[in-house]
Image (cartoon, rainbow, N blue to C red):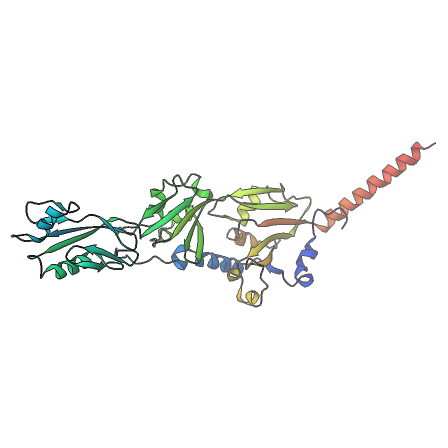
Amino acid sequence: MTGASGPGTNAITHAQKNNPQIRVIDVTDEVTRSIFAAQNNSTFARILGDTPQRRRVIGLGDVLTISIWEAPPAVLFTSAAGSNAGLTNTATTSGTNLPEQMVDTDGTVSVPFVGRVRVVGREPGEVGREISSRLSSKAHDPQTLVRIAGNQAADVAVVGDVVNSRRVPLTTKNERLLDALASAGGVRQPVDKVLIQITRGQTVVARPMGTVIREPAENIRLMPDDVVTALYQPFSFQALGAVGASTEVNFEGTGISLAQALGRVGGLQDSRANIKGLFIFRFEDPAALPPALRLNAPLTAEGRVPVIYRVDMSNPATFFVMQSFPIQNKDILYVSNAPLADLQKFVGLVSQLTFSVVGVVSAVP
């Protein structure tokens, strides 16, 4: 229709016939539940899992301190200390601290009178017992303490919009996501506008920081080599057509409902809006679609399905569904004109043109 501000209701409703790649879906309680189920499956807890408490084992690049004690009369390491300035005698006759060593690329360290000892993948206590066992034939009742003085093998990188991007060591405390963010000084933007992304190997998962704070299950334990990225990403949707204000609207990372979105743009224009012509344009996650529509659904290069959600506001039950239907980042909310409104605009344009022509003719002598 001439003078329309966008596609009409019928044109959008039949979009799937004209373009089979587009799915037109009526918003119902079942559809809303399917979207929520997909969102609940895309969580840190479900995809990455809350790993069990881990034992601290030695890794490549770790720095170790090794202390050895001998029962009196102690002569093995104390005599060695007299000829080797690298060994420090910390007791009168029985205790010796070896110089700190970084675990070599072959996963070993060197211990006097013992030789090379494989340490990678083993707990410090286990390594200490092996050293004591191998010294037992040379020293008098040797006891060995092995400690990790420099943790270089088990850490996570915290980057992005944080106060201090850094590598955070993982200890036997089994640090969680919020622990790592706190160690980096926290985020620099409002919590409700920050997205937290965790990269673990080839898996990348992102969640709003507000959700991580609000839901303890999302505050998962981290694993070595995880990359935690804080992204300042204000979420927004665009409102077009017969709405109170055609504009781009920012919203919190925790999300808003369709009812809230309409409220933020001033609702529908009574004189123009088609109450059966409210649409949400979205590139949807295939997992959020009902099984029947998911089958053979064409995907974009990003693995999404072009979807138009249709809302019939003439049905009172729809208003309950609208309170639950989630608006997502980059959605387009469009309200088409009522047919009568387009006709009135057309008649108005014709009237203006007619009066203009009459005025010109009258003015010509």
